[in-house]
Length: 330
Image (cartoon, rainbow, N blue to C red; front, side, top):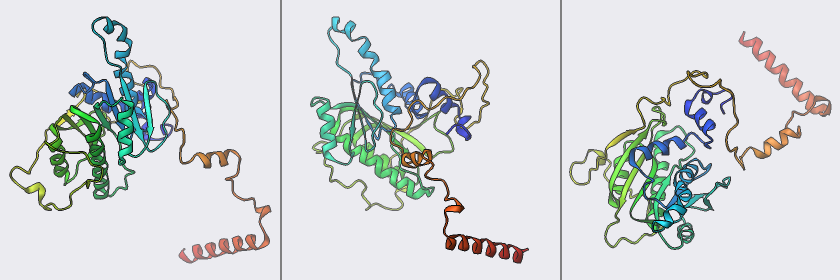
């Protein structure tokens, strides 16, 4: 990406490589923090669906600033060590100060391992930038994303402390009000935010849930259903206490770069554009085996001299048939 596609002119894609971020999505979390001060007072953070690690990278850079001032703060009464845990099914290249767990966020064992890394203490902040492989069918994509968000919420109820914050990606669709109402059960403040670095052409947004306060007597349970399908199809048109309307907020300086605009490679006041490779290439890409075979010239087409007479005859017959069909069409 970036050599011959629109990403070459995507300003946030280029800035991410210049500043050493693993993905352009790092700017989304940075802009959310500018608006909501998510990192204030945070010493234990969890990044769900972390790979390739751009949000974990942001947490590492921002929260570990406290580590540099740790010696100074000890003299003033002590400071708490910053701990960051990243969870994903896929392996991820290591990051300084980040503990990685290769596990499933729908398993209670994963929640227990997170707490174990925090030495039995709950997290202050949980973030999730996970998303499914979109199909282009919006109804399907929105439903799968809703399931993923609620799975993240489910494990968050196991690891988040009262008063903590939860940030997750959401696809805004016709049934998004149902998600808002379920989030509102656990958080007193729920806001839907759209960072400046998120493309306007995308239906993605982020729910910023603050002040975690679960219902009295609530016991986290991984076996709970993620979505209750027994709701009215006209849920969004209901009036009364069940209807939840959350504020929508645009994050980031409005005079900043527009993620949907195509900028020239040579910007005013910036050095000449020069292609740079990604900060962290994939460590186990699905195309890795094909790349190795191609380097060994094992993916090349079979040479005609190595074909059997029957194969050459079939190939000649197919070519002749195609030519006759073309002449008939003409």
